[in-house]
Image 1 (tube, rainbow, N blue to C red):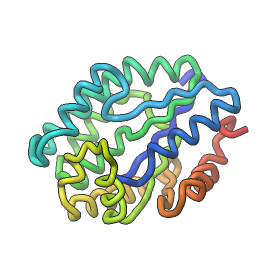
Image 2 (cartoon, helix red, strand yellow):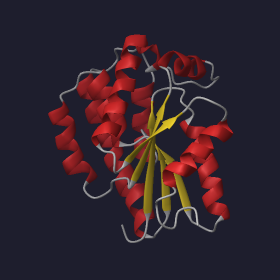
Image 3 (cartoon, one colour):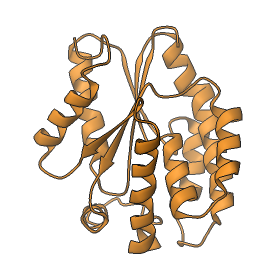
Length: 211
């Protein structure tokens, strides 16, 4: 969109996305690019209010269908208030989760109808879609151990159990298999420097990203 570049970061709990978003943002800013770092659910005032509803409370607070609708309400506000304006002025947008998370969390792991999710994608996303999606892959047990060790963890999804997170991992990997032109699977095991090197390799073919 008008010279902007949209990169999304996806994966299960505790895979290290947020650390790598910050690292890539610093690298791009040092190269002179305007970078907008954002997240989902959230990324705009209205979307952040919905985030508080979705990520807190008991594991069964919302059904997968209700979660899907809440996520897409949040996503539309995020698109209107943050993503589209940034892309239209030519910024690089780094988003910690986007539409693939709904496909994986509410769809593959939660059981929401994929036709519902697909219809919402069509009407809500319009042309605001990532040119590259980095799918961070890590054994769910290791990821949950990392996530639950964070002092500020929003633990509603973490509390859904290991079977849920195994389905979640399979859902993300299926998305990557189905859309190889857009998605790159990143081995999230190892130290942050190793993971960063894998990300840089996965972005090397995007013109103008890393010089």
